[in-house]
Length: 260
Image 1 (cartoon, one colour):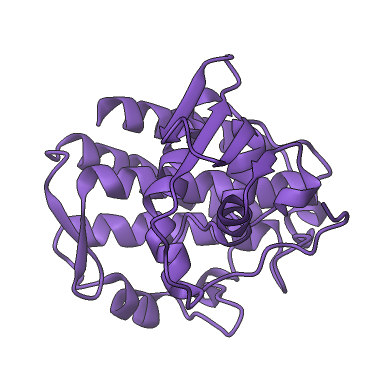
Image 2: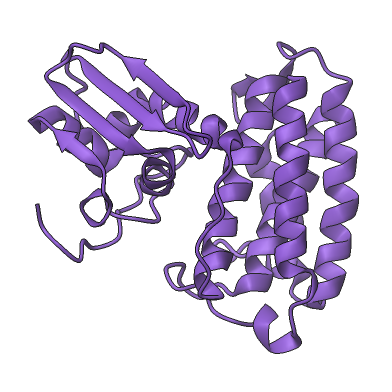
């Protein structure tokens, strides 16, 4: 738990530095692949769900859906419009406040403590920390893309990699597919050079390559065909096409620029 929270703080600091000196024009810059969102919307979204988590941990809200409906002013583009009046620097200041509160709450939790999240589906404090870290990195990719920068990836991306594997059954379910018993092997090289792997090493269906490429695919920001991933076997190709680290409906992958 401490390792995840330390990773969470490090990633927060990295994203904070990314947006700290943005101009007013840059705060309004649209995100390339998120309809009607700009950079300020991305930070509002991150801050709001950190804020929601603090309320749920404290027992001041019943579940994420009902809290969001009342508190966010969510529109058809899933933007928290209630906070649109804030300037970019004001949004950043708010995020700093709520993320500090969230991390302090999580440090005081047993990793197995249950926290209400989706209606009727609580998650452990450790899983909540991993999910918040994954979502933070996913939306930071949107900001990097909007600024024309290459997303930064550290070894702490393992939380996102784990969720890509752990959520595989859900990826099939939300795409109305039956998950087969076909063994799959996932082998990824972290920025440090270490190997992160899951599954049956002898499987005929496998995915190998950089952790960065797979993480970008699993948060639905890149199509696997546009990466250097080695994806072998029919089931591995299907997994790479539907993998999704976050809950909700099935999001389409970006349209592939090349076919293979």
